[in-house]
Amino acid sequence: MLHRFLPFLLLLILASCNQSASTKAEQKRKFVIGFSQCNTAEPWRDAMNKLMVAEAAKHTDMELLISDAQQDNARQVADMENFIQKEVDLIMISPNEAQPLTAVVEKAFKAGIPVLVIDRKVLTDQYTSFIGANNFNIGVAAGKYAAKLLNGKGNIVEIWGLKGSTPAQERHDGFAKGLEGNPEIKIIYDQDGAWLREKGKEIMENALQRFEKIDLVYAHNDPMAIGAYLAAENVKRNKEIHFLGIDGLSGPEGGIQAVANGQLDATFLYPTGGDIAIQTAHKTLMGEKVEKYIELETSTIGKDDSAQ
Figure 1 (tube, one colour):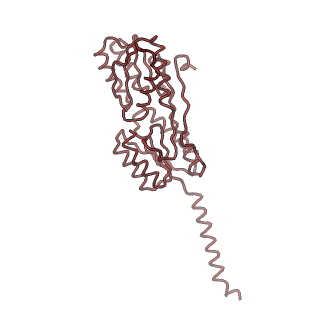
Figure 2 (cartoon, rainbow, N blue to C red; figure 1 turned 135 degrees about the vertical axis):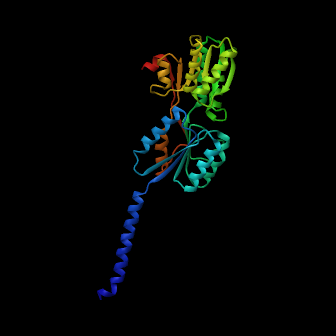
Figure 3 (cartoon, rainbow, N blue to C red; figure 1 turned 30 degrees about the vertical axis):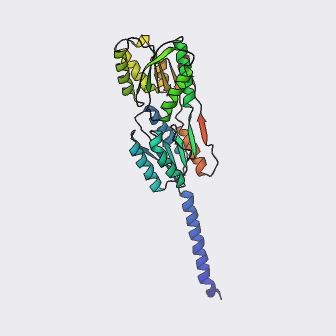
């Protein structure tokens, strides 16, 4: 009688083996995360990437792919389209500019791919979560700090980040708010430095040629502020001008060291959030609920704080 049941037994064994192999394959499967970085020319963004890679290495079930848009909106849209076509499990994006990247973020989200927006915003709420610090509040803190340094009177040069990006807009608006109540403080010159140190240096060189009296430079990040300081130092006017930056990176070329060196009067900490982004991505992929808006903490770093 046993021979009559042998085919069925073989089928059961094969099915069991296939199920076991399938389960093992699922267990070994890695979640693929695509991160569309707007550029890697800024030290702050390089630090973000490194923090993400280090945090992702802690998760054996995760593979991180990073693309570099090189400050090119069209290239970043193409990077996003590539991630969508590959059907990655989750996309993270730090948009170069808000408006040009909004549609492709919505496309990814509507395709069923979770999307984490990092640092810079888009003009939609069609994404899973936004992770970043409050740039408006940082601007307010910088404005109040500037007003105190100037004792309510003076000429300011403002060096913007990329004007089409939300952090630059918010850092400008916040700074203007922080200066309220000080009618004798004037922003006499402002230009777009695209977040780059050399651009900041060039803008300051032009300002120094045009204006005999500059009391303070407010740059939207530390590299541009340091570039402006070097331009002033080259013509021996650095001692008469205050310099404020934003980022607060550690390391020999970071804003904290620039404050300690006396190049900057202060920097305002803007965390990259690279580790938080990876942690949030992993929670999302594990089916855990994440907040729609995750705000990172910031602080003011002056001379005393930099030493600490």
